[in-house]
Length: 369
Ligand SMILES: Cc1ncc(COP(=O)(O)O)c(C=O)c1O
Image 1 (cartoon, protein in one colour):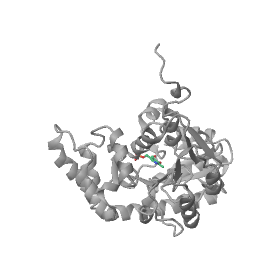
Image 2 (tube, protein in one colour; image 1 turned 30 degrees about the vertical axis):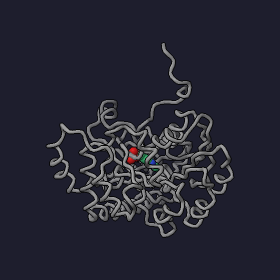
Image 3 (cartoon, helix red, strand yellow; image 1 turned 180 degrees about the horizontal axis):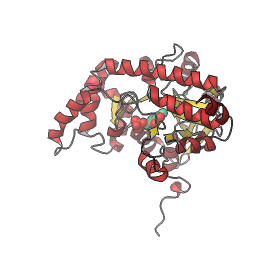
Image 4 (tube, helix red, strand yellow; image 1 turned 90 degrees about the vertical axis):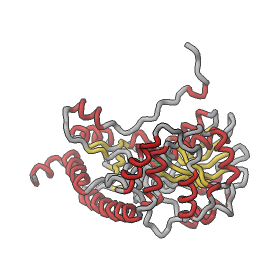
């Protein structure tokens, strides 16, 4: 066998939530609820179908390499300049472009100990050294993260809100952190769940972009916009950094259907607004259920919640699978007694809560049935 690059030793393939089809086969079930990947259970904007249908007539043609029309539209909406924007095949790709463009062998990258796993994987692929900083109550410890920044640090990732814990860092703390990150370090703030946030303690980072040319913001159309399958996300940063990433990106990374769908989505604020409201209702419903069961959870600003089931979460995860409900067991993310559940439709949340109750309190739930 020919050896791959040694940097790949010990890296495993990304482990996604369990696929619906696989669970149906394994358990002989027909109805499965997937509450594992933070997708939008309320769908996507109705404007998308028509836009995608129209673009289908162009399938034989390569797309433009930087989705310029979408860039102008999004830049106007966000009040940035189009040259501060880059689109990726999901924001996953922007993370990879950043590590590909900036990480040399041995460069250090500071991140939280329990956060989106693609940061670490991409750093390792490039031969960089992830420096993982313990979290406090499921939240980034920015003071300790700052302490870990040295002359070897190239990148810092702050996932805000954080996946998988759903927590945010407080406005003043983040602003102070941004001020103190030295200019030789690129600070990446991943805001994949930005649109769901309703806390008034959340820092709006966009207005700070001009002031801090080493700051990068990541967002995506996969989450609240409901376009996960089409793969389109974006980064906002100084034009000079965009130019470097463009050298590394594949020429046609964002396909025509994705760009058309994203563009149509931007015309439908009502869909966004409805999703936010329904997600808040679902969040309240789940939290009420957790409280009734006496379970603790991390305060979330997203469309998912991490709940402590007070025992090895694997067992509960398996029990839920038997009932056709797929969630994410926390052991994959360093929290052995926690599950991460994506907020679903009202009836999905109900099925999940009933299942959880039946597993955790079997006698009580039988007698009330
Ligand atoms: C925090 C965070 N960043 C980035 C991504 C990647 O999203 P996408 O590549 O679909 O835009 C995800 C997806 O789960 C995420 O949770």
